[in-house]
View (cartoon, rainbow, N blue to C red):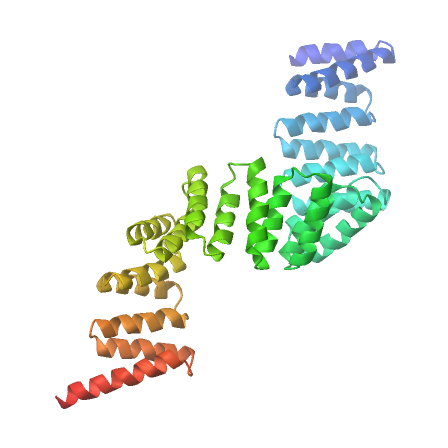
Length: 380
């Protein structure tokens, strides 16, 4: 719509009955519903020129901006709306959700808090406040708001799920499982609740139940690489390494750059003594994440088991660059250097262990053996 046409339309509407403004509002609403957001915004602006207090026009104009991904414009629109209607919980709530979608979680929380001040039992206000706090990792505050939300509406599966996720984030796995179960009683096809319950069961060491929960989630969303990966972890802990590898490969099918899945596949292949596939998996994990300590460490173990000692030493050295306080890697490195006959270097590695753990029995025993070897060498 041209600027000239817009001016002409406003002039015409000012000189016609209020019904014409209502007709233009209806037209703008129709355009909004049809997805013609830009034209709708122009018409909403015309309506607001004539009726600056039209709450519906302000709200729908902000929605149109939201649908265009113009979050700052939507927020600016709602700020103007709230100047006209400062005590509207509806507009304050809309501003909260707009800020949340825009990633402005502090602003969202402030808006939801304002809603609660204006109308303490406003629908979903406590849930939305809890969601913002959860996103900000303020879990204890989130739990309080979500508990209030459940008091107000105990039949809200999303609230039960989010409270479960918040409890999980604070390590309260039993409580998390209870909340996920309540959510699933109301919405049994919630794949996220099923996989999240699996995560909590995995943390509690109930690997059979975790695997089952992941399987139920995958029956709903078969292409979720993270759930395939976590099911693989559960099966690995049940010593079902072939089944775990199948899960890791599914995860990698849907997400080839999943470094953790490559690494875990390497571990299970190593357990099955499939050395070649294990090494290739570790190498792929390290290609994706060169600072993957565990991959370097276990790559060293694999190479030593296959008598590729010099290559194993390179892996341990790289691991220790990343985590110099890990006594295990120093111990393994020392043992490797013993195998290579590098006694002085082996002694230095065991000394590193004892600097970290003075009573380490492996390092004490091996250091004594190395010292004897060095003394014999000096006598001869």
